[in-house]
Length: 312
Ligand code: CLA
Ligand code: PID
Ligand code: PID
Ligand code: PID
Ligand code: PID
Ligand code: PID
Ligand code: PID
Image (cartoon, rainbow, N blue to C red; front, side, top):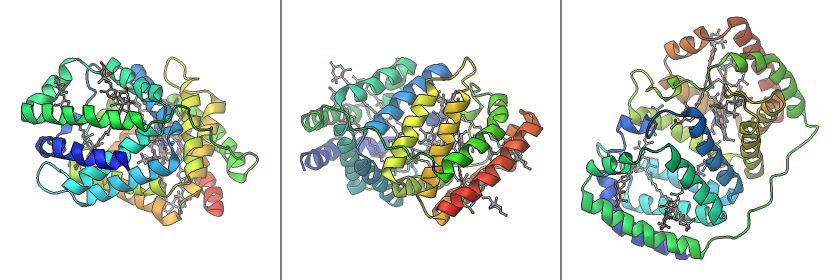
């Protein structure tokens, strides 16, 4: 297709740049400017809306391309192979083309809003500037091909199951865990702190398991889960906490996407996360909330998971 061909040209223009970026640099965990959680949540909300509008099959293929690319990483900078670099660009170009232009621009504008204008120049200073310029020229040509292949209307909303066992169980889980949700400091910057003692390549292994899981999930249910998060963001209070109803809808939606993949796939995520999250991190989270609320939430979760497993 045209986007695939254009991605090869983009690769010619951008792979030198890709090799010079230190993908393992911890700086990419930081906010790209001053820390503004509510504004950052707005930017993420725009990404969620774009993800919900994207073609689920193309999202799956993009996830597969990322998984494959992780498998061909070499060298200290963590760069993938030239062929996989091109394949990721092609897959993302197709995802972008599957949503109306305005949804893409909304992400761009919201990210710009939380990005200090000095950040791009700083990023450029870490690589060969001429190669960054060459990559950008390549991107500008690529985006014209994407625009020429872009849809003009958004896809239909997801179909949301009703009256199912997971929906009923989500009500009980949400009643048991909403007090815990209200105890959590959602606007803290602690969630952007590095995981103690873990390197980027180690962390990427766990993310890879999530990518593999996401690719196997039912596309309609994933879309529904993204829509539920978007709605929940719309009802947050000043402390970032969503309404009880929207929280319940998120739990139901996540229970359904978990049930749409084999148990072992879910356990692979859990086990890989357990390898990188030191118990001190979990204990620290626990120390900041009312312990009775956390225990009630945990009890609710362990009951909920049996319902999910029975449907899985
Ligand atoms: Mg989410 C999970 C935040 C968007 C899909 N997500 C999580 C949690 C964290 C979070 C609260 C990971 C850390 C953790 O396990 O804490 N997500 C979060 C934010 C946003 C977002 C702030 C921004 C909008 N997510 C989002 C989108 C999607 C997902 C758009 C795609 C549709 N997210 C997704 C999945 C999962 C998460 C599939 C998880 O599996 C993970 C999670 O919650 O695992 C348990 C603990 C969890 C909480 C504090 C909240 C849930 C409370 C439960 C139901 C009860 C509590 C149990 C117990 C006390 C703690 C967990 C025990 C542990 C051993 C499992
Ligand atoms: C400017 C001035 C003009 C010239 C110009 C110009 C530049 C415009 C630009 C630009 C626009 C632009 C856009 C970019 C957009 C990036 C979008 C990223 C989206 C990320 C998403 C993430 C996600 C997920 C995911 C799916 C999940 C939801 C999420 C489900 C269902 C200024 C040059 C034209 C770069 C969507 C993918 C996992 C949130 O206009 O004169 O330069 O760049 O998890 O959804 O699972
Ligand atoms: C524009 C203007 C509108 C019209 C429009 C428009 C276009 C927007 C577009 C577009 C946005 C867009 C984005 C693309 C992004 C591609 C990103 C590629 C990333 C590849 C990576 C590969 C890798 C790895 C990996 C992880 C490793 C690092 C690597 C570590 C820690 C402008 C059309 C709407 C194409 C990251 C995965 C293995 C490097 O908006 O008018 O057209 O395209 O090895 O991580 O090692
Ligand atoms: C300039 C002037 C214009 C021309 C121009 C120009 C240059 C702009 C540039 C540039 C922008 C730019 C951006 C770059 C962005 C790279 C982003 C990389 C992200 C990597 C991540 C990696 C990671 C992980 C991971 C998970 C870990 C955290 C991490 C935990 C909990 C100035 C040329 C356009 C290079 C996210 C995945 C392992 C961080 O605009 O005229 O030149 O470069 O380790 O999670 O640990
Ligand atoms: C233990 C001991 C027993 C008792 C027990 C026990 C506990 C087990 C547990 C537990 C398992 C468990 C699992 C959890 C799994 C969480 C999975 C999260 C997945 C996240 C994903 C993220 C993503 C995306 C997304 C889609 C994108 C890709 C991504 C596309 C196509 C120990 C109690 C049984 C919590 C998949 C969603 C946006 C990466 O066994 O005695 O306690 O918890 O962006 O894909 O866009
Ligand atoms: C288990 C054991 C196996 C069998 C199995 C199994 C089950 C795994 C499961 C499961 C995992 C799972 C995960 C669920 C997670 C739910 C998370 C809910 C999060 C809700 C949020 C709501 C909100 C917001 C929002 C953003 C705001 C904050 C809030 C900010 C900055 C165990 C079946 C495989 C259900 C985050 C979105 C508005 C609070 O593995 O043997 O069954 O379920 O307002 O952000 O303000
Ligand atoms: C313990 C002992 C057992 C019993 C038990 C127990 C407790 C475990 C616990 C607990 C785990 C736990 C986890 C919590 C996790 C909260 C996660 C919140 C994530 C929030 C995010 C928010 C954000 C943003 C956002 C984007 C911004 C950055 C942020 C930028 C660029 C010990 C009870 C089971 C509470 C990610 C989205 C706005 C950070 O196990 O016997 O009690 O709690 O602002 O992006 O700025």
